[in-house]
Image (cartoon, rainbow, N blue to C red; front, side, top):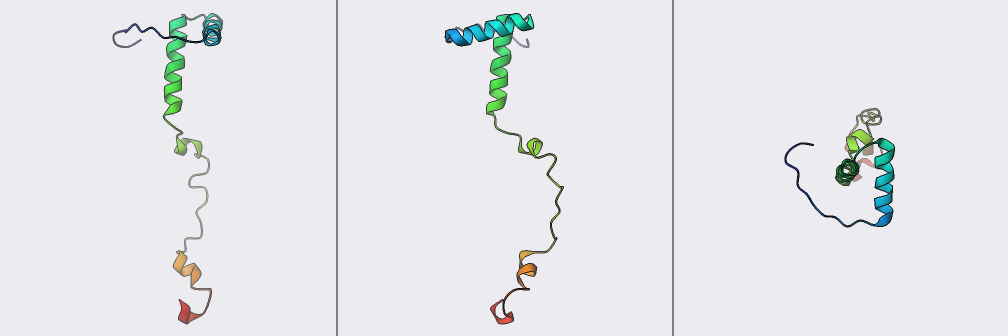
Length: 82
């Protein structure tokens, strides 16, 4: 852990306590370490989606026609209405 540690008291439900305790035992880690990892992961997820990362396989894949809307629309309707 980086920096100076600060001790906080937090109330959690029995179900959450049980889940964190099971995880700590399964991963052979300290309860506090599992708690910190869960909090950090939750904070990262709450920052929102990385849309560039989520759409990595799609961005730049489709180039489009290269025409402007004015050019495309010039082919429709009467000349005097343009």
